[in-house]
Image 1 (tube, rainbow, N blue to C red):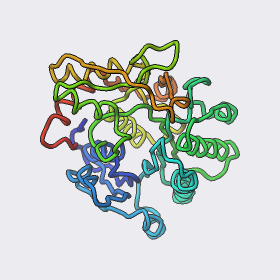
Image 2 (image 1 turned 120 degrees about the vertical axis):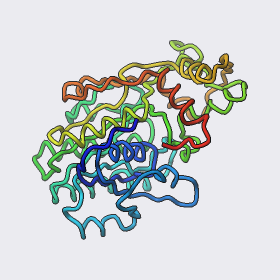
Image 3 (image 1 turned 180 degrees about the vertical axis):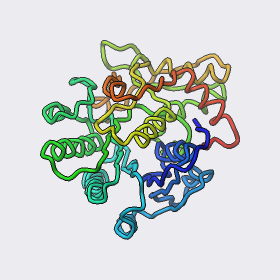
Image 4 (image 1 turned 30 degrees about the vertical axis):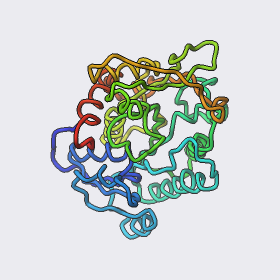
Length: 337
């Protein structure tokens, strides 16, 4: 995941830079020769460990972000906006709008005014149950057909739609803008996310002890237990896509960030056990009724637009990614990147 050091490339601001994808992007960009400033809240847990190995220019409180930006209009060569309320179970829609939509709008406006490239996190949650496919089309009519299944997904789609409208109308825009629709990301530095950690992280303790892991039963006639499908993507691949965009300022658009290949939860669980040289032990339990009607049975990123734009990185296979995650991070004394 680490790139070799090159000459200095510029200064990148990463909002949510102490979070999961943001901190891995920070490591990748730092390794590629960029200086990094982070905007995030560390609070009292171990989230600080996500950035403890980074050589940072600054750590900015979100409360002071726009004071810093207004005082330094030409300081940053790019803004990577990963900061958001990312919990799909968060129910405070007002809080979600303030954080995921209004903050994004304010950053868009600042980047437009200062001619600073903006790369931001959208989400595969914008696709809802997938009934309208997984095509990262920025066309306003295509976006209007999507039906997210939770406030988080709706807030991300709300910003995508606003971006599409502003670009179509010729309103002021950053010189480069790119939204990334992340699919099911797993890998190091997700430990602060609690229940929102990847299934890999949740299964690992049981697999390490040789105990039985639990997966949700299927409540859909077309899918067997454990056969529910997701596009599981290694976080290092996400960071490489961010690096590609930062390095290619002529590329703008909305892009899926996944592997393009759906895999089952059963395959994922089995890979965790095999990375530990254990035989899989899996039990299926009912999906909680509170989320059963909003459960996605299939996601798969259509990567055609990203490939056409020049992103030619070969995705990490599920087995290789899980083996790296388990052996190089989860099973070590220091699981942080």
